[in-house]
Length: 113
Length: 115
Image (tube, rainbow over all chains, first blue to last red; front, side, top):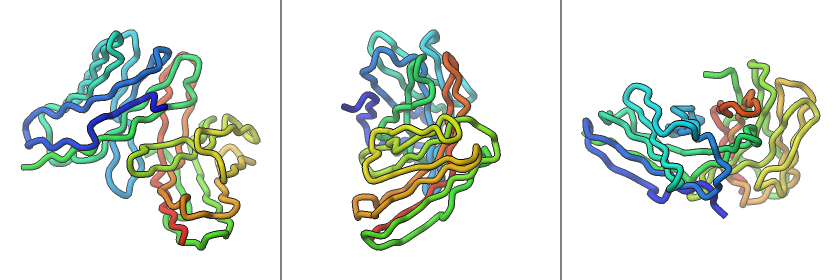
């Protein structure tokens, strides 16, 4: 049973536009959510996170939104740049299980000129 | 980058042979993890360790064993490699504390091909 779902395997966006990557979860005990970015032949790198006590967290061009009632989070990248082309994974854990992350299947973002 | 290295970075082996992958960290983090990444499956946890000699299974642990004799090293062993274990393997580390963010930091990965 996939507790963290990324239903869009790929997304293509023009440079300068907004990229919106979506993630849904089923476990209501999750209270901390993370986004990772992965380039080919490299390990995933931590990008941004959000606690369930917030509904928005912003870091430069990256903003994560959390809708707890819908069990949905999204990552907004504005403006998108070609260097943002990568696979993005969302992940989650619960407060009593912070040592184990549950990952989604990833969304491949391509930003074209 | 967090100080995490994996060796080897690439390996080709034959079905039925044992294989050991090594993860080494210089961050003195308590937790260490082994994941595999496959198309359509994302990152799946194989085993993890919460201290020296303390390990536990993840969701895809069958056919794998681990050992952690020192804080800095976490070994993943495929007892008898099968073609289904062809994958990219990532090691990760964390200092997750209860109630706080559990960010994990990943190594560069090992691409394993079982022929």
